[in-house]
Amino acid sequence: MTITHETPAFATRSHGHFIGGQWTPAASGRTLPVINPATGGEMGSIAAGDSADMDAAVAAARSAFEGEWSTWTPHQRRQLMLRVHDVLLENFDELALIETLDMGAPLARTQGLREWTSQVLQFFASQTDAATLSSPPNNLPGDFVTLRSLEPVGVVGGIIPWNGPLIGLWWIFGPALATGCTAVLKPAEDASLSVLRIVELMSQAGVPDGVVNVVTGTGAEAGSALAEHRDVDRIAFTGSVGTAQTIVRASAGNLKRLQMELGGKSPDIVFADADLDKAVPGAAMGVYTNSGQVCVAGTRILVERKVHDEFVERIAEFTKSVRVGNGLEPDTQLGPLISARQLERVQHYIEVGSSEAELVAGGKRIEGEGFGGYYVEPTVFAGAHNELTIAQEEIFGPVATIIPFDDREEAISLANATPYGLAGGLWTQNLGTAHKVSKAIDAGTVWVNCYGVLDPSIGFGGTKMSGYGWKGGREHVESYLYPKAVYMNLD
Ligand code: NAD
Image (cartoon, rainbow, N blue to C red; front, side, top):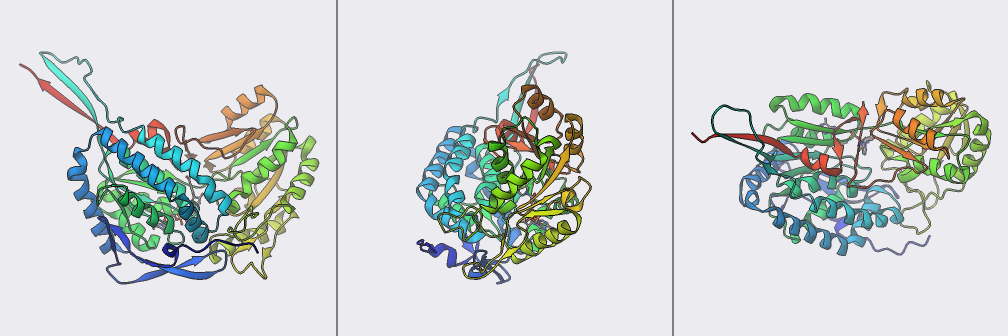
C-alpha cells in the first residue's frame, strides 16, 4: 500500500443541506452515513432530506430567481462563472480526493477531471448570451412590431446518480447559471460530498445565495419531493429508467419540463479490419472505466467472426492485467463499486452470465487485506448471443459480453436490438463502414476507433428508453429557456 493522502476534513464531517447560501440540518434532524466504498467504513454523514427541506430549498431558489439575480447581465453571469472556474481549479486536488473517497473512482480518474471541469465551465460561461431577443417580420394587418425573446424557465430541479457527481452537477448548474435560472440539486445518497463542497466553493466565488441549493437524502424522500414540487419548473434527471418513469408521473402535477438521461446497453462493434492493438484495450476500457459504472459503457462487444477467437483471447489477457484496488493507490486502474448493494447486483449478473455464457476472465469478488470494500474483478463472457440476460440488461459493473456476427447488416441489426439507444462504438479501418454503421446505429452518440470521449460543447443524449434531451452544446442551454412572443400594435 502506498497511500499517502490525508483525508480532507470536509469528507469526515456531518453535513447539512446547502439552502439559500446556508448549511441547514434536515428539518427532521435525521442523517445518512457516508460510506467509503474502498473500505466499507463510515466517514461522516449527510442530512436525510424530505419534503420540508425541499420546500425550503425551492423557496430559496424561487426567491433568488425573482430577486436581484434576474437583473444580472449576461456579462456579469459570465464573469461569475469564470470566477467559479478559477476557484474550483484552485481547489481541484481536494475535490478529486473527496470524490475518490466518496465514490471510489481512482484518483487518476478524478484528478483527470480537472481539465474537463475547466472546459465544461468555460463552455457554459460562453453561453450566457443565449437568451436572444429578435424582431422578426410579421404578416399581421396594420402596423405591428413583433418581438421574440428567450426567457429563463425558472427553478430547475436536478437529480443525479452516484457514478460521477463531479461531472453530473455541471449538466445542471452550468446551463442554470448561463441562463439566469436557479437550481435545487438532489445528489445520490451514496455520493453527495463533492457536490456539497462545490456549492460551498461556488458561494465563496460569489454565486448569490439561493441560486444553487443542494438537498441531500434518498430518492424516495428527497428526490420524489423535488419531482413532485409544484414550484419547480423543470427537472433534469440522470439515472435509471424505472426512476425516470416515476419522475415523469410525479411531474404531471404542474406539467414540468423534463430532461431524461438514462441507462444503456451500448454496442461496441469490432470489424475484422480493425486495428486490434487499439480495439482490444479500447473496447475493454469502454466497459471497465469507472468500474463499469458508466451510462454509455459499451458492454455488448459485437465481434466479426473472422477475428472473434483472437479478440476473445486478447481481451481476456488484457482484462487479467487490469489493476483493481483502492482508488488512492497511484497504480489503481479500477476502484471499488459504489456500495454493497451494487456489488450484490453485479455478482448476481455474473452468476447469471456464468450459467448462460462462457466466463473467460474475472468473475470473482476481490476480498482480503486492502480489499475491505466492494471490489469485483473485471469480467468477460464469450460465447454469448444478444437475447441473453447479460446482453439485454444494464449491469452497471465491469462486465463485458462478447457476441459474434458475420456481416455488417447483422452487426447493425444486433447493435439496435435493445430497448436502449444511448451510445455505440465501432472499430474499423474502412471509411465506408465507419460512415454507414455510425449512421445506422440508433443512439445519441457513436464513437469510431475510440470510446467514451466527450466534449461539453458538442454534448450527448439518448434515444428510445435511454431518454430524451441533450447535455452539452447550445441545445442544452436553450432547453433552460422558453420562447416568448410580444405583439405590439403601433396604431
Ligand atoms: P437511480 O435512478 O436509482 O438514482 C438516480 C437518482 O435518482 C439518485 O439521486 C436517487 O436518489 C434518485 N431517485 C431514486 N428514486 C427516486 C424517486 N422516486 N424520485 C426522485 N428521485 C429518485 O439510478 P442509479 O442506480 O443511482 O444510477 C445508475 C443509473 O443511472 C444507470 O441506469 C445509469 O445508466 C444511469 N446514468 C445515466 C447517465 C446519462 O447521462 N444517460 C449518466 C449516469 C448514469
